[in-house]
Amino acid sequence: MAEDRKGGRGGGQRQSSTGSTQGGSRGGSQGGRTGGRSGGAPQRGAGKPGRSGADGPRAGGGARSAGATGGKPRNAVGGKPRGAAGSGTSGKPRGTGASSGKSRSAAGGPARTSGGSRFAGKSTEKRAGNRYGAERPDRRVAGPEPEPRTAEQAAYDGPDLPEHITGKELDRGVAAQLKGLPEKLAARVARHLAAAGYYIDEDPELAYQHAKAAKARTQRLAVIREALGEAAYAAGHYAEALAELRAAKRMNGATAYLPIMADCHRALGHPEQAIKLAHSPSVANFRPEAKAEMTLVESGARRDMGQLDAALRILELAPLANKSRAPWVVRLRYAYADTLEAAGRLNEALTWFHRTHAIDGEELTDAAERAADLERRIGD
Image (cartoon, rainbow, N blue to C red; front, side, top):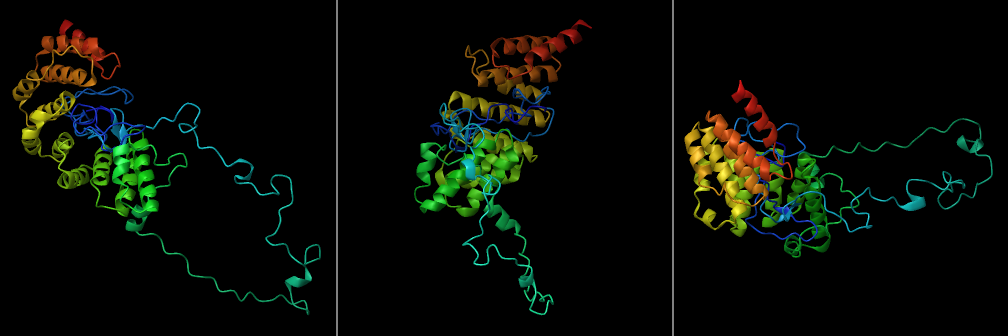
């Protein structure tokens, strides 16, 4: 499917597990970005969205389980944190003034040698050799070349941290979980988590590397495993995402990760496991947007197995007629229209593409283009 990362694989928006920026709450069951093969609605910014259900998993899906890295729907690892007006946190980091990168000589004054030389002002030509004019041999022995960093060491170092990312962007609940760490370690981990949230939409692989650096420093916190799981999912590392989210679930018992975990099973070629997770008892207690995410994943898994009628029945049990214009309603309608088209029910599909477009004020989908295409095909 040609959805962008905001669509992901299961059809919904990703619900972050990596630290909400600017005070977002860590609601466990918010709707996430599990869009993709299950027929979820594509997002803006990725060219023309394709037919949901036809393609493999997209990097950048995922139901964000609000918490560790911020994101768009009050979650944790989401988009770039917004700074307060005039704070300068959302633009380029400011330089350090006159001293940034310039010596005194570059600024117009003389470059002073450290400590000042007592030979200053005297010719140093003779001092380059001995008293007979012969050049002194260089007896200095070059030290060994530094060994290259191992993969484990490189993961620990992590990518460079931008100066404007301080770690204060994290949700309070996430920051509170880091307080048991030594102060300097907590500050470093917080900056890597915040950086993962900053980059997860525009550069998910970089976000993933930042989350790995956080985990390399401490693995005992569920919020860090959660952050790495979400970032790995966004970057398309589905096996690692599944392993990390399972670890987080064992540590804190949260079930908000289930839609992402189910979609990871789909990506790894195990749709039956995705369906099994969709029938977990805890899904009944999900909020509407989270239930929609799981519905999209389950219907997509049925499509993966060639069971179009079953996929349609699952979607028909969802609140397709909900009058809300929330993204999860848009995605459900789009998935239903897309599945109807895949089943050859073109007139019904056309009706639902129009109904999707009618509530898609944010243009999350290409429903209008799909409707126009179907009208031409039906007219022919």
